[in-house]
Length: 410
Image (cartoon, rainbow, N blue to C red; front, side, top):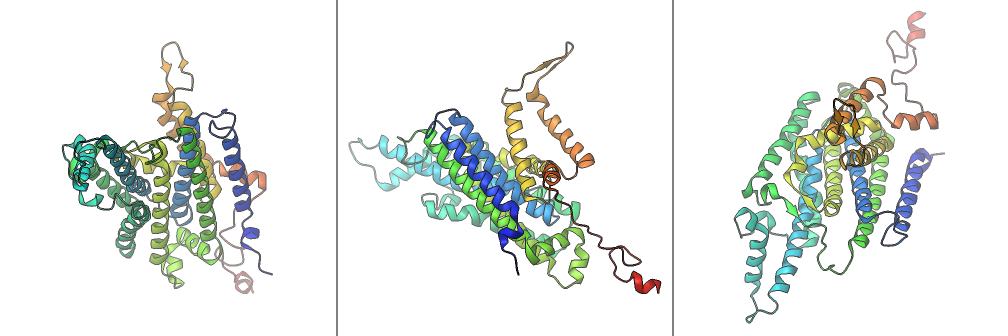
């Protein structure tokens, strides 16, 4: 009898249960709904960490399962933040302008309101007119659609051009990094239409909710982030299960053989690359309202390299490994760079973790790559007695994996 999806993937139910208990625990200990044991700022940190776990799953799908080392996926994360950030900044500024002009002797026209909003938003870069890309900034519905569509279109066009040319390996990684660098350079310019180096700020202030405390909003975003992470994990588990999952693993292990078997390798790659870009966009749209600001520095190539490090440390090729890696590195990074880790005085030199954290992270990546390729997720495998599949098959032939040894010996 065919097993159900959850019977084939028991880790899904375990993950959902842990995520649900975590969300409930943070809620009852928050300042908004509980005893205040967890501060509002830390609730935001936890909510942002769940968003980072989402993009880590996306990275694991494209790299850990399909073998595409993308060094540009964090760009899609940032694009999602910019798309929702445009609406948040426009709507919030519009409310402020309307309130400030409410008592004017002559009521302003709609065009005057729009001009005033433009001056407030773009005055910092010496402009007052809305660029073309802000055409739909006043519509939440359209901007939410763009959160998914813009990363999807960019990834789809890039992937189609790259995969149809059969660019693979380190060359593809360099191309994705070049794409990210070009996008970051463009956004740094003041005439990009997105306020250049200043980025979009004040995103934590939700329009029409001036009377709602941040403690409450932070918990709402935590719930939204947890729900999105749950759906992302379900999607990832569904993708890597069954025939589709076997094909993308085959592409990772031996692309030429999968193509020889008649599968459209480029189609599978394009689907994974585009779908994970869309997931990254959704994660970014949830992350940056909690962070309060998005700027081009978030899209720089180094951010995508960090993402690969998270997945490697957690254990690529395991969805829960990607989640563990993102959460572990995010929280430890906050501890080290937030000044909570005590400095170490060696007499001749004082180790300040704010300065040394990136070195520690780099050494951790090298150590995991050399000595523990299964990452932190490998510890879960040991506890659950999960064994890695034998990719070479039974020794029944002259070559590993063949099935003709008995006939060859007779």
